[in-house]
Length: 372
Image 1 (cartoon, rainbow, N blue to C red):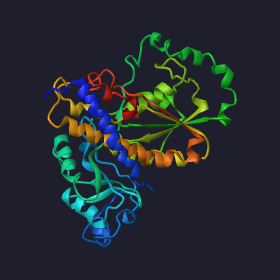
Image 2: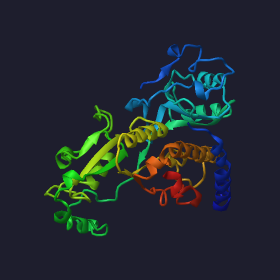
Image 3: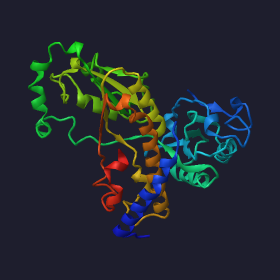
Image 4: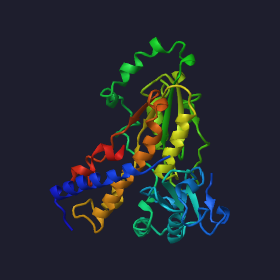
């Protein structure tokens, strides 16, 4: 089914307009199972009781690496945004329809819930499940779990020559080293790096010794699991020793930085935002958040490069936009508090969608705001 650019742009504008209904949504480990909820469903209480106050506090829980496909779909997670007037019965009916075994993430009085579900066969089955759940009573939107995706680093990030660094003015930073290095142990800058950390590359620990802290001990892949070292590469680009090993960091002063790594592997984007929120809240002073991830999952929407849009593309694109609005609202309830805004500088990659399908063909879908 071919769709013109003008038609899709009009549809995209309509989608954004319709997504503003989410402004009426109120926002306030391991999971709560059916057996531990004290009732016949995942949420305890009478069927007609308001659901949001009855939701349990459940910290984000990771999926197994085997339950994430190559595009980042979490085949055992379903992300649901409930309406403010949803009842306990509505939530439990959704859980039953999805055959959910536990609540993987929830907070009382917040409409954002991640359900642990039986492993779906593939991303198509996961989307089909979300499509069956979304029209149910009390549901504002439903989408299959999807972990953040790393935005690619520039080509040649591990160079033999350093010419590519001239455009980014790395040498200008290096020339300041002797001027700013003295005494910086007492005035370290904290940088939080939310990303994917699964398989540290050689020399990483030596190059960043004494600089990087992990909010939890990172796991290493076990054969045949693929590694995902994007987060390590981002930190290496941010800071690495100024020595014979390459690449040198943009800031060649590791002793002046304190880097906190937050791993998003195996977490739905909503759960990842909650982990990032906790990392920021744990800091009492000013911090920089350096984010090089996104969650535009266009690869699965456009398996043929979007020369002809696949059946269901418009509906899936609408769901994607609504999902982005919902998670943006969830993040804003924390990030826009004065105590956070006044001390956090958030640096976000704009995205790589300008020259990739469908963004290359349809401008409405390469808007950087959708990926940030």
